[in-house]
Length: 429
Image (cartoon, rainbow, N blue to C red; front, side, top):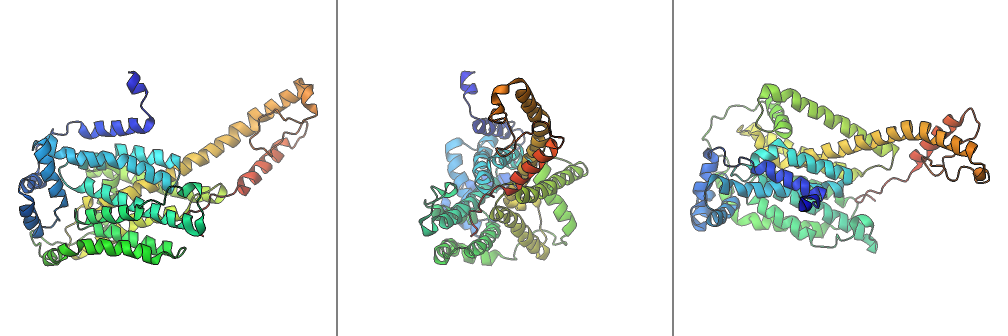
């Protein structure tokens, strides 16, 4: 019990996430795609390479599963545990990404959402590559942000609190994680496209063109040996009825997948998904309101997250419109952006509600009453007017016997709130 009591809150969240994903991990037998993964992973590396060269997925996940089976065995629990590992690793990575992009409140909310996400729990219990792919792309996106933040912060030999320690090799992490993701699934390139667009946006404020260009060149150069197999397979998979993509149905399935996962019937999941989307819109509206009225947030952070969500969505829907073999799980790679935006919005709502509580309960009732009582019953403080009284802001004073004390206090507090210096954008000028 003492050891449990010593656990920090992040460790508790990670432990709960692990328990959710490990619970009944082997309850169901392997389904077709999982069985194919296990079957392919039992060959040697040369055979895996040859077979995936004529398949629709590259070989990296099957390489990892091959070595994992040789270590842990081939039971349902063992082969699914590899996906569980990467599903759990996404929790601390989501925390640090949200903390770096927004603030600590958003980081806690993002970690909790990711820990209890039905989508992440579902695919952490499936012997497929989707948790590995999502983890690698989130890692590369976080590394890109750190690299951009570090280059902006180090310009002119300036280092601020937000970018201390960013002189590391985040560009190398960015390139390696993206190469691994591209060798895990071909749809990783839509995240690389988002990263390229954000890099262009970042280059509007800096002049590190060659440094960023070499990372993208390294990614495509590393994937070049596999490119002929991709081109040979492009458009050849005619194993399904082509059909036609219904955009409204695809968007509905994406919303359901992001919010309630794969385990809820559609007629039940639709209102739940709609409720989460409303919460997202309210949260984003609160974020913009909070930025205008208080210490604010960073525009680059919200642009980064929106591009992270929108670019893969648009590109994949365009791809599936030409070859409609759509499944909402393919958009799981953009789900971290959805959770980051949701966490940022909820953190803004929390901050605005704290301000409302501040005014309603701390401003009008306790402080004014306390000031009057201390003034009337303790004459010693007459010379230093209310110096020992608690106040909402340092420049807010309590009037002794004024009919307009409430109004003057409110006006001064609002003026102080609106005049507070906004937090600087780490990627803006």
